[in-house]
Every structure is written in structure tokens, then in C-alpha cells.
Image (spheres, rainbow, N blue to C red):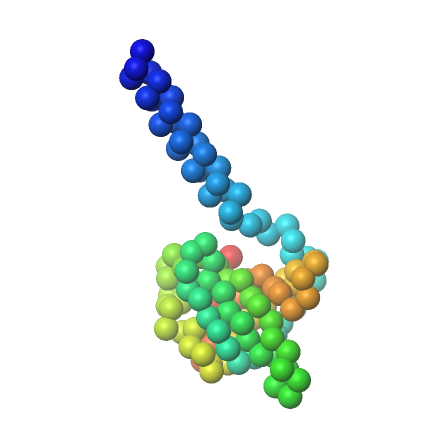
Length: 122
């Protein structure tokens, strides 16, 4: 009986951990896939961590407008030949993707071009 209770407790704990992970990861429904945008700008900040890499880049040099762009997971980017060191602060990046429906200046990138090299992120 004791081992059955222990097994149930472990299963409950693992279920709670997995559910928390699923909730923590956002979906893509907040992005408007009917509107494709292309933005070029200088990378001001970059993160190459799970669940998604992201960059902040200045797209309007004189006005200081900064966009946040969510990229693919690092494992997918690595498998497509896009390495972490490509996301250098000061580099110019062109992103093609979808704008967020509710958050101004945020996008989900589907393609990135840096230094003449284009990588598909889907």
C-alpha cells in the first residue's frame, strides 16, 4: 500500500511539473499571420536561450523605435546553421514575420538575415 501511495505522489508531482512547463510556454495565437512585416535594424540586445531566442533591435535610427522579436528555439536555429554568435549587438538584422495583435513593437520572426546569410526559422 505504501509503495502505491508513493507512486501516486510521484506521478502527481511529475504531472504538476509538466503542466507548469506547458503553461509557461506561450503560443503563437497572439500574432497576426495575415500581416507579414519586414523590418531591418541594429541589434541592441540578444538572448539565445530556451524556449525561444529573442532580440531587441532599433529600427528607426533617428527616432529610437525598438522592436522585440521572438525567434525560433536555439536547437532549431542551430540545426539550420544559425549560431549564437550571429546575434551580436551592433549587427544589422532583417526579420520577416508577423506582428503581435495586441503588443505594439513585437513580432514573431519567421526568417532572419544577418551579414548576407538568411535562415528560415519555421
